Image (cartoon, rainbow, N blue to C red; front, side, top):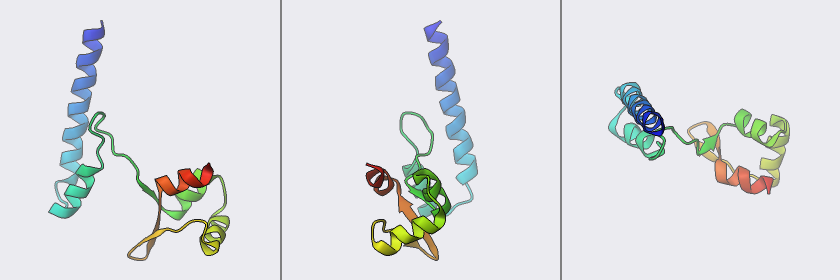
Length: 97
């Protein structure tokens, strides 16, 4: 029984990786490398390393306005990616401690 479960998990991992490769096939080489670097080696599931303001506020269970206030106070410092602000997962987790 355990062997069957392990085979099933291995086949699912392979299918997920193939699907991810198909989805990122149209990306530039540098973007493709970034996506592949975020895929967890043991699960094949992408790991979120940054959050947009709405997602970060939801993770902290606060409003976007409160998130903006924390940013203005210097308690949270997002990275700028173009016009977007991205809050790091590690920073949000440290803030929750």
